[in-house]
Amino acid sequence: MAMSYSRSYMLCAAARLGVADALGDEVRSIDHLAEPCQADVDALYRLLRALASIGVTEETTSRHFRLAAFGRALRKDVAQSAWPAVVFWADLLPDD
Image (cartoon, rainbow, N blue to C red; front, side, top):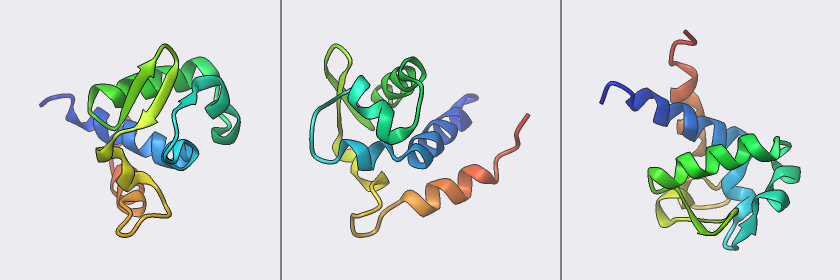
């Protein structure tokens, strides 16, 4: 529980990078995702593995991910998207 704020930071990073939108309904390799997310491949891989640990993504095979049902709400194009709320609330967290 003491580290729960880190989940907020992970979700915010994923939202800002557009991870859920880049994944869509497909399984994508980390190399394929890095370009649309404008992210470093290794850093994005660590983020997606961390997101998998909380049920947002799933690593289907080595370095290939899909969006889990829980992560679908991070897409901007779904009804009742959680994207704005995730970014808003995470921005309120202290930076220290």
